[in-house]
Length: 432
Image (cartoon, rainbow, N blue to C red; front, side):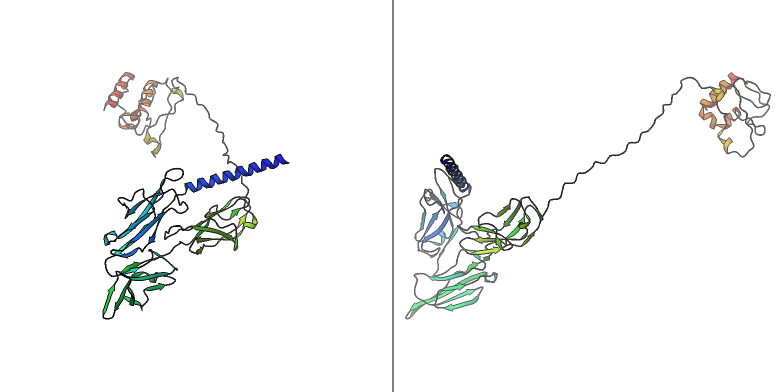
């Protein structure tokens, strides 16, 4: 038992060491950002006044040296210096945005991200209007202060917005609660002071005030889709973003089902259900809170149902039936044709003729006939059969096959040509 307890203690210690290492690695991977604040004086000052700025890295207080920048340009003589930067006997030329950056040697990040800028304004007149860092947050409050060089006792202070008077009092501050977009505009003040017979009055330069939402409207989504499948993983995502960046602001997320919290609020914008079940069905929402401001917003509502996974259907492949086609081989003979089996030859006009025509099939052995019409021998018939043009030219060869007694192409008195003469005539006709 003691050995088992020792092994369990070692396993727990190893787990804690691994968790600490993972957390350290996570912190190292997160980008560090420096921030700048007013240490002494004010960001709104008069000519000749003094202000001191301080740079720091939240969560990492020691081991840093700093670089200072004005409008993105490094300040000469303020590289690898301490955390303080002082404007002595300020002049209007020193007005502008100031930022800083931390760097160090050793383990961890070597250089931080540049801090958000802090605007310093040096007023060359007698009166200045001090306003919070712009833009201001919708729904929050804002205080404007009217300052006079040398801080004399003020008899009257008048605040204006876009040329319209807002307040006339001896008090040098104007307080606005629950800011809305109607509060945007140009503000300035006029102060009056003096003693006995010597009085003075001056007006401050105008300051432009803009009102913005601090946080976008959160949007809840089911990344794995709806309805959720029983036994499968379900992932919820809550999307929100800071519109107005401020040093040290963080977002925290809370996921709810039917109004009940699912887990402890954290900086993770997703929530995972490893195996969805029937009890995981319901109405889901997420809540996003800005740490340090008490600002919170709720997301849209998403109705999630959990259903059983449908069985996988097996598709049967479609088989196309095969049709057997029988083929027959036709053998062609190379021997000369038997002319005794040839059908009687007739001109093309014979089939469409309406005349009563008698046709007589001749044998290759018949070289003479008692009829007065000329005939061809078997050899002459072969020449006529091979010459297709001779069949269409009836004006020259109609006598070759026409045995009609009524319409003879040649007179009866024309003598019968022998075989040699007929061949010569056929060749002559073919030439023409």
